[in-house]
Image (cartoon, rainbow, N blue to C red; front, top):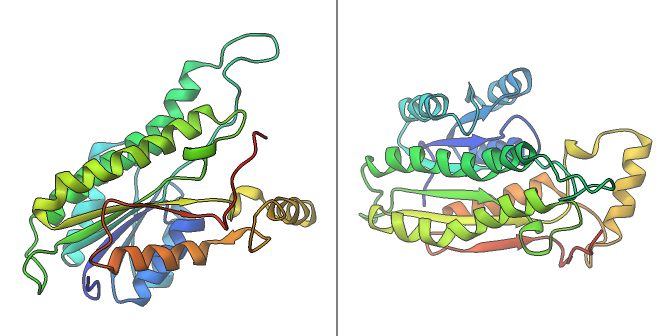
Length: 256
């Protein structure tokens, strides 16, 4: 799929996986809308790549619709990358036997799962209204971000694993829903990727090095650029559809 001259929306585009993917898409000639709540960082990334920043909560219909409309003004919307996400660790019951607050579970699902679905439905509607590409059928591609935790979540990751498992679970039916419109849907399930979530400084670097030893090969954390490289390949490969790809150096997460 040709993306030069088309527009793209990247959620969570202010940093980490989203920022790296936004840069890669811009290098390929796409007009990128960086969707994020981090206004200062998001505006900086958008300025760097000649794109547009849209401040939006991924689970807010009106804010996401405004971002999709902004993208459609830049060119036909062909790409959505759902990379916004978060995790809040907590066992289902604590040491004192009290249950995890339900709000904590609901919040993680709201951002990771509901947000992914919300952005997808709104972007898909805009994509379906565009003229098809040269092959006469293709109109766009959607890429979700799940996690290795969708398959082997660790202790304390029930909300996170449930949300990412939901993302994996909706990939194929969403691809089937949108096939009639020429829109493909795929998911990347990253393992341990070096992003700002681990912090900075000597202690953070030591912790990341230790984490990297649990990866089969290479014995290190993955990089945001490696995710972005995979993202662009999946988005532009016309025969890639309805699939979840693990990008994890063959790691299988232990219980803790």
